[in-house]
Amino acid sequence: MKQEKYNNDEDDLIHRTRRAAATVTRRLSERNGSKAFSLVEILVVLSLIGVVMGVMVPALGGFGLGRGAQLNYSGNQVANLINLARQNSMSKNVMTALVVITDPSVLQGGQGIILMELKPRTDGATATPADWKPVTKWETLGAGSIVDRFVSFETEQPQPAFPAFRYGTASIAASYNYIVFLPGGNLLGSAGTSQIRLTEGFFPKGDSAPVLTRRGANGQPVNTYNITILGATGRTKIDRL
Image (tube, rainbow, N blue to C red; front, side, top):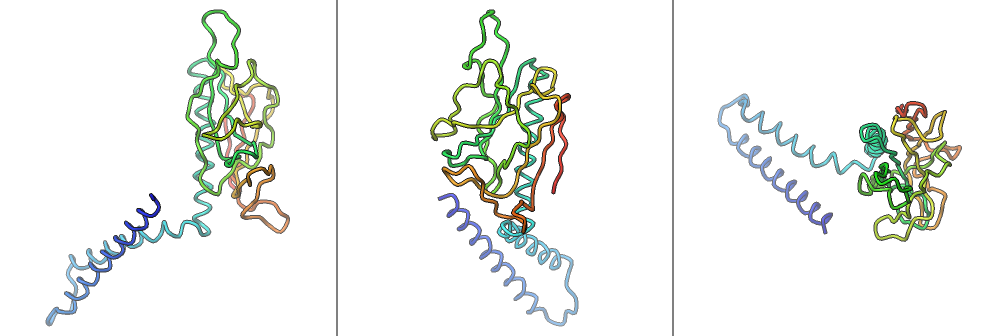
């Protein structure tokens, strides 16, 4: 319904723009003996061109540059969450995890991301999985963008372990990738680096192998957004390939 309303609004705007342009054209043609346009008339025409371009350019977003822009948006979204996780750990003196759902039984595997934190208990009791609390709500990457691979991700389960993750109304996710920031801003159990790659594609439900929508003759993606996280400091480096 929202898409239909958007399309109707867009059609109405285009119709009104065309009607306004026709009015300007008719008035210009009715000018008697004038050999030049006034400044007002030129500004009106330029503004009409701007309106039309503002309507048409987003409609072309699915082609070429538009798809690259979508991947940039999704990559920036993940990079911002990584930086937020590090900042959260350092400012609150807590462990903060970035979790990406990879379970192929979940429709949007490779697209659902959440931040969780583990605050030290004040009663002296041993922390339990229930002590992990969400920092953010589940965020979903833009359509057509996925976290394709954690080149190196955390294999050491934090203590306590994570609780069961339920993404939206889907079943509990059986698999996920994650990185954990410690209160010092560094990564848990990682003396080297951790890398996350985003690309254009999707995970079919029930299939752990992604379908890449743009790939080269060698089968590798031709449009990627790579985030490297230094284990010792937690700082990020972005490479756009």
